[in-house]
Length: 270
Length: 304
Image (tube, rainbow over all chains, first blue to last red; front, side, top):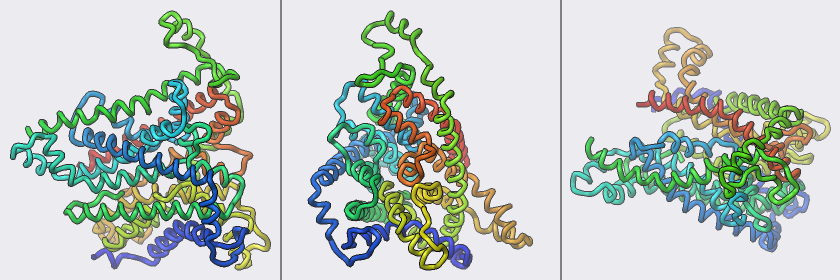
């Protein structure tokens, strides 16, 4: 409360300008997706024309489905693996190769995507794996499970361990104590982790380009190849749909984290 | 204490599945990159000559080791295109990170001074664009920056320029795109350290007669250094290997290393050289990566 008086005009200006900078381009894109004119910059009145165009574009629809399927499956596998990794790191204390394990988990978070994509492609080629849905899913799982692990781990770290210990004092074995006590407490961060993995997968262009095969492009790959040729109003419509989907995901995730903060713990930032 | 140890054993078993996964799909692939970077280019599918074949046994393996070639690396060092690409990548990353720090710091600082309730709101507002598609955000800027785009329309309407300015395919457009995309990565760690800081320290400095800039420079900024470090490295490393933003917003006359690697791989189909370029990039990035890990470790120790 005492903090309120310390806000200077400079603070307000930098906050306003910063947020405007972050949101204006997206807002403009959404508005122009409803533009009736073929020329992207000339306003020709409101229209859903470009949305119709998108829903009649077979290749784009197929790419959108591919993206959704990859995002769903990779987010699910990544959440399972990432949660296990988080449990191992925050509750496993010391085990052999722990440093390597945490190193590998932080690696993909900062590694340039070109390197991750290239290395996975070379692996798939060496294994003679047919590239397509599964190779992209595996690649996205590898990337996103690291984000899940970080999100879940931060929640596990802030959890009061005496709850688990109490359950075990009352006769639970560790696995049961985890399932009955810890899991419900970290559930919101697991949901948030899934959402993050889903949106990251839906968004990824570089890794998908390296690991997908001919004829199975994801939505970002299609959008990218269109964008390179110039701005098209149809792309504005697709992008608005993706933004809408992600906004929905964020609302659900923030409800989940609100739930977790109502349970008495401070919510993880993601 | 004892129950903690009982808990530790099954938790260790939890590591098995993700451990194996990361070994298989993160660590082992680098072995393949290394192997292919040492092999010869060939016009075939896959477009390289396998240096050794594991099925052929030890004799073949040792014979192959003598045939390993460093030609691809020699090519990288002697070809100006690659040397320039590395230099440009580092220049762009340093410049963009400096810009990000200059722009992100005041925003994070403003956030940290808000009421607690509004801090949470602005935090969400900063994170939301990070969830929104990377590609779409760059595309949104193409809308704004193109010849008859909004920026030029505004500049013309304000009579700041007499004819449209060329923004697309310039370095300014690329820097706008990079700063825009990475801003949340800079703001969040800065905000985290600034919000934790005791306002009493700044007040004490002011009470002792320090003018505001001195309070900032002698008290606030040094105390926020862990956040500065984390933000700088979180932005710097991925920007060095950036591909999408320079490809869509910058001109094509000087490429960054991520683009060169991509071109070599997809257009020239020279996988060995692309792999060698990736290895060198990895080696370049290992320095800030290790720095980052040390910093994190130190922060963790301080936090305890």
